[in-house]
Length: 146
Ligand SMILES: CC(C)(COP(=O)(O)OP(=O)(O)OC[C@H]1O[C@@H](n2cnc3c(N)ncnc32)[C@H](O)[C@@H]1OP(=O)(O)O)[C@@H](O)C(=O)NCCC(=O)NCCS
Image 1 (cartoon, rainbow, N blue to C red):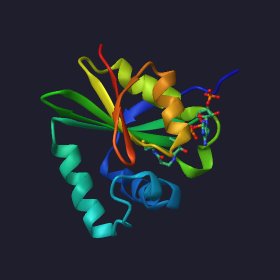
Image 2 (image 1 turned 135 degrees about the vertical axis):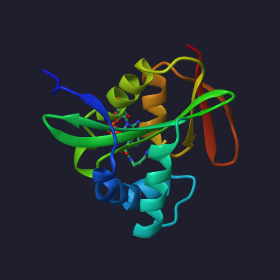
Image 3 (image 1 turned 120 degrees about the vertical axis):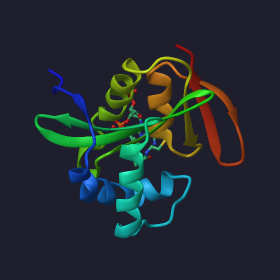
C-alpha cells in the first residue's frame, strides 16, 4: 500500500528545511541557478514568497514527515511548477505524487522547465500528463493545459 501524501502551505518554520533541500548538491545541479544560497538571502526569499499572492509554496508530508516541496508561480501564461523531493525520500515515487497533488489545486496552463539530463523529473512530467513543448541547449519546457 502507498504511504499517505498530503500538501500543506509552507510557513517560516520551514525555513531551515527548505534551505537544506535547496543547497543539497543534486538540487543545486538541477536548478537553473546552481549557486549555494546563504541563510540570510534564503530567509528574505521565503518571506517574499509567502507574502506574494501569485506564488504558492507547499510542503508535502507522508507519515507525518516532510518529504518534499513544490512551488507554483503564477504569471500571465498560467502556473510554473518547481519541485524538490527531500534527499532522504528520493527514489520512492514521491515526486510524481507531489506534482499531481499540486496540479489538482490549480487551473489554467501549468508549465515546468526541467534540465535535459534530469531523467527522473522528465519522467515525472510525463507521468502527470505534461507534454514537451520545446527544448534549448540545456533545458526542456513542459506544459499541461487544464
Ligand atoms: C528529481 C526528483 C524530483 C525525483 O523525484 P523522486 O521522487 O526521487 O523520483 P523517483 O526516483 O521516484 O523517479 C521518478 C521516475 O523517474 C524514473 N527515473 C529515476 N531516475 C531516472 C533517470 N536517471 N532517468 C530516467 N528515469 C529515471 C523512475 O524510475 C521513476 O519512474 P516510474 O515512476 O515510471 O517508475 C528528486 O530526485 C529531486 O528532488 N532531485 C533534486 C531536485 C530536482 O531535481 N528537482 C526537480 C527540478 S525540475
